[in-house]
Length: 291
Image (cartoon, rainbow, N blue to C red; front, side, top):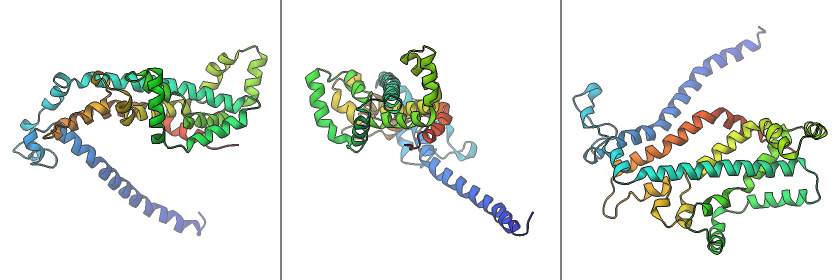
């Protein structure tokens, strides 16, 4: 090893423990709210304000394990009907994410690989739509849904979310980077139709972007709180985000019950992220801006 590189190697060896210590510290700070939420979900209403985390007692590690309870979860699924809201959220998030991913992939493919006169104006229109704040569209969107008779229906939530400008532009960039034009032309010369090319050739090449956008849309729909309150009026149609908000009482709030509902709401999306985390990371990097 050259003498000049020895100090750099020594600095790297000294810096790695400091970097690891900083990462462990920040990870612990990030996990504290989740630990508090999990502890609060299993505590009684009396113990909620007595201890920060688990109630103190004479049990193992100084914790009163016998005072922990699953009553909050039992009440959620038996008395408060949170199971129906959970199924509503799963249905809305699944249908919306699948439909939006397919429609955005088709739109991005058309903008990236087809040659037609309106291609550049349409691309500029998609870019212009990106800067429009979502809350500005609530009033005109509500009026349009009222005129179409889609209020208090799931279609009123799903249809407006099928082709957002962000998703179309994201897939356009992924198509430009990952799908060679020569490959498409070769498939056409072999007699493949446009739909066959799209589903059997193009989509597998942008699979990381498909996984990433599928998860982004699923999380966005799952956590959507404003639009369901605007579009839906029937309580049996409410998703989980609205149902958890309704757990707040007029004269008092059972925070343990709310924390257990929050824990139920984050479990499915956490599982989805663990399944698609590799596609999520590689999909975001594959959408780098080009051309």
